[in-house]
Length: 623
Ligand SMILES: *[C@@H]1O[C@H](CO)[C@@H](O)[C@H](O)[C@H]1NC(C)=O
Ligand SMILES: *[C@@H]1O[C@H](CO)[C@@H](O)[C@H](O)[C@H]1NC(C)=O
Ligand SMILES: *[C@@H]1O[C@H](CO)[C@@H](O)[C@H](O)[C@H]1NC(C)=O
Image 1 (cartoon, rainbow, N blue to C red):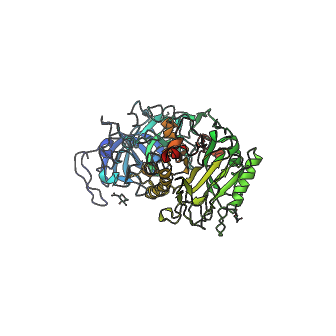
Image 2: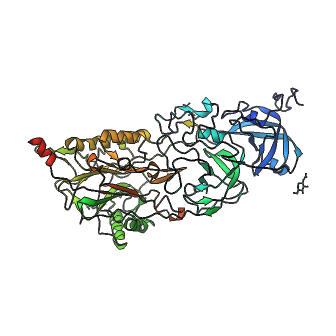
Image 3: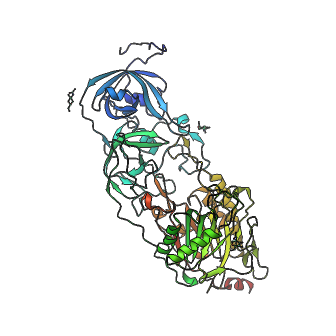
């Protein structure tokens, strides 16, 4: 039939004349130019089988790195008639671009194969070793359509499928993985990047060159580098199950499998289940920052305790972590404290019982007798788990510090204000504590920041804190998805929230540039992305890791998809950016197995001199 124009009986659909190679069908772009067309006499070596199809590799490869030499043939029956090692010819098949959601990338595949001929059997099948038989995956950029960073704004400007750029597998991660779809590959000396998903899918890197490797051997994202050199290992083709006990930094046995695109990500489906070769020997060390029991060395922690209610199973574990790993900081910013009956949606908003239960558990675990400060939200107004009424709160050691006297606590709806003393020029708060602009629409269905003013027992001057828990990234699109730059869920809301919080803080620093201000918590954002670059520039505060020059790769408090990342931060006023300040992230969540995870966030601990030197500067001005 070759060279002759023939007609399929059913639809009188023209078949393409000459037999195409697999590389020609895939083409050098994301979407095949033969999408929807019927092709004839496609020849390939069967490299792998699944219950729903087979993977075939061209017997006449080209030398273009952009074109995959392999393709998936979707058919539940074909695997019954052919074997791995067979070279086969498909008399005809339809080229199809498949995806299960319109925000995902497509997988180029052949469907409705007919006229299957086995040309020869028992041929050798050799997987391509990634980085040796293929290029190495690019380490920084995902596509040419991301404006230089997947976190650039505005999001969702273009779809890859519409632009369909020519693949540049040496430059862009998605182009690299697309250029290998359908291929049987081996990942040598893989390292697990985090605990598996609930489907037991596990992100890994191989022995190729990577950037952003952190103290535990996983990869930390940074500005313009969100680690496209990583790949997720999905469900094994032989129906075995991946382990659930894998954790960040574990060395795995070599992985051989096929590259595909599924559930919104480029994925390797391994021939058989992953095996842990040697578990990471690391276990998270406790902080070395211990209170000096004076304002010269006050310890301050921040921890998102993940939907903590009085009856939470993780309540005693959180308490024990605070004592053992955080060494009972003098002041602790906490987020995700639920009301007294947790997720029961019955109008209860007080968290007194949640907080007193936590405080008793800390005491039982050998910690101090903390006191607490919080303001309850209006019922069901602050987002989070329905009925839980999560809010931020402070625990503080009353033998070390107290709220500054003089102002009463605000209500849920009272907006805190910065009051400047006419005589001394010193700032103070109208409500102590008080929520920041709680009626502003920017805070709809989210947590309002809690501002407080404190004095250390031996301090000469007060210091200010703002406990932050901004809107989540929910509603975002896949980093491997069609939409570019990907949707960073809630980015506009967080930008507004950052502006409001920062402008409040800027009033403190305008009145007193030497004020000690600490804004900390779960910002749900990275320091280099717009909400937080805005926060820093408007507030006059500096991110503490940045101020202290923490190695960029060791700035992380969370593991999401392929990345170790920092959603939790402390921001400090200039006077605290001294060499006396210290900061540590305590990886009680990132480094442990799924069964040992207590909260999804890592806590952090800092040490500051908050004594203050009376108002010498002001007096100088007055002279
Ligand atoms: C392929 O090899 C198997 C044994 O490995 C043998 O049983 C079979 O006959 C061989 N098939 C062909 C077509 O040579
Ligand atoms: C991208 O694709 C989605 C889903 O089809 C569509 O809703 C959206 O409008 C597209 N975006 C652009 C910028 O074309
Ligand atoms: C919670 O405690 C605060 C003070 O600590 C008190 O004013 C308030 O009445 C308490 N709420 C409930 C419901 O017990």
